[in-house]
Image (cartoon, rainbow, N blue to C red; front, side, top):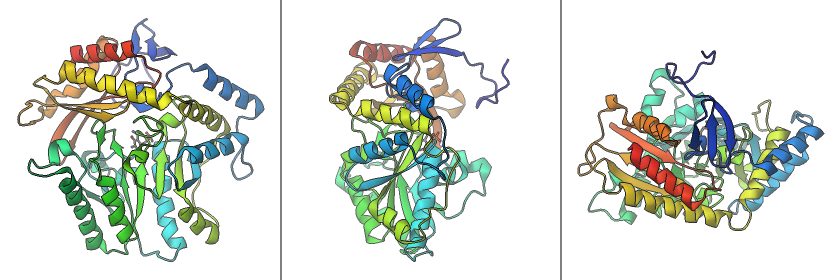
Length: 435
Ligand code: PMP
């Protein structure tokens, strides 16, 4: 009996009662390898003594102080640490309590930025049809999945979508990677021009797409071309690293691998490592200056901004992430995961693509490998794989959604970074068994 409105109302969920390292235990005594870190959240695994101690110490000092009265050592330390680790040019931090809040704040910040600099006519946001940016109304409007928005129409106007960078399905056989990236950049530019070049606020994208499609990196050069298009039209580039950030892809910031300077970056999930709900927007000096020299006030705010315990947890999480060897371990374990999956599943007639970066890997399931035909949606293959995996003691994140008319069945793997080679091999074995 549950009094909670769970997402899937009919589902009877096991009760999680313990977590240690990469394992979660339920009330029936079963143990699961946390192969997805929840939804790419638990980057340090469960029960990390250092993070728990940092939270305890902060609670002993002060658990809550509203940001209209105070800043705290914990929040300041976290902000400084993030700026030190971020790609050059991201110099300020706006803390929030999660991913959707971060996206929402970034969209409003981008909008108000143009008001501050005297271009209030800019009002359009362009995102990609593949992306997930959160579930609050603004973030949902930006998100690319029409089926997620369908029941909430009319949703916010002035949000538009262009093609994702999804080489597995979209890159033409006769097209080089450069030509493919150029085609997508040209599509974005055409859309900006159509809306009016001085009418667009921002282009929003995930560096590595997560929540809908299972870890799809962009082709090399894509983001550099996108940056050029944005610059030509004075459009801000917002990169949503809520899922792929904080070391998930083998670098603390995923955009570091793309060689571009975003104007705004959103982070969450791994930032708190599951110990506390926390997110943030990171912004450039240019954006900060516009506010500082303009109205002096970002018209936004939430009650739990910069929550001291959340900030203390995140500060410790990020400190641990930045220790020598951590990102190298993520890269090495990521390669082991990819080659294990390739060996175990690469020949499967129902595995179309295995992809990703670092400890962020996706498997796309298809009815027919040769023509990439998806499964009949009614079969809910992704949900069945999740169930079979749980029966084998593995948590993997299932994803099914329709993008451009193609129904996808995907499985996401995003285990904690502390994972060891033999646990990677167990993930592969159990997933292969489930599939
Ligand atoms: N952006 C991205 C890229 C995400 O993956 C998610 C969550 N899956 C969000 C935003 C929303 O984050 P939250 O669920 O913490 O609101």
